[in-house]
Image (cartoon, rainbow, N blue to C red; front, side, top):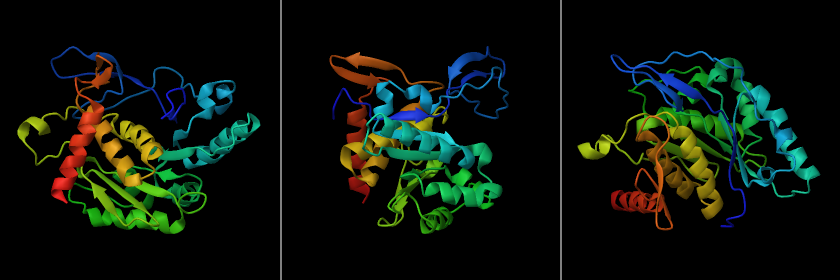
Amino acid sequence: MDKQAIYFASFGSVVLDEIRFPNQEPLTNILGGSGAYAKKFKYTTPLILTEEEKLHGTIVLSSKSFHYLASPADLKPRLLKLLTIRAQMGISHRPLTIWEPSPLTSNPDNFQACLDMAKLVDVFSPNHLELAATFGALYSSETQKSEIETLALKVLSSGVGPDGNGVVVIRAGENGCLVQSRDIGPKWLPPFYVAAMQEEQASGVVDPTGAGNAFLGAFSIGYLETGDVIEAAKYGSVAASFALEQVGMPRRSKEGQKELWNGASVRRRLDEYKARQKSTN
């Protein structure tokens, strides 16, 4: 991979949280933090949106992939604006586009709009709760994987991607993720941390906030690197594991020329995850 190129850019959100625990001092300015029992929030500052026009003259405009956290109503004009600006700047290749539907707009009122917008992107990736909410279905801890597959297939039948060759990736918490496309039947990949594993591994899960975003960023890199959506989902599953291990961001360090996160090598963990999949298949 070209180290000078930009491979992933996100039109998502950056939120600094204050987290309050019983009988403890609150944690402040936590990037992506979340309460373990319940959460209630309000915005204390106006929302500042990253607009496509502001990428003019920056290397970010040439990114090989773009992630959108957006409502169906916002996605189409923003995506078209991005592609128009890229064309004006002489960037001819179409980037990989990933849409994570905004949770607040995942409801039956936006059902048809959601299906229409899925046709514009290469990857449609709600989590299982957002998928259910869009269809007006209810999920619980007893929900079967087959129910998630049924809803994902309905989206695929409507069409995903400009040429119909897009992929649906449903992030499903402790059930891992579902990858499905027109050419690939439903494929489930487990999370790196599986509840049934040894206690010391299960205890690695501290806070789920940010795991979905980490998954999609690494999925994009994995797909650009391998051209294989299943392999890409393995990248995503491993990246999500680092987001789970603490409240806030994982700790970055270096060991010689190697980059480490929470003291672990991402590539080594990816190899471990792949080896585990081979042994269980």
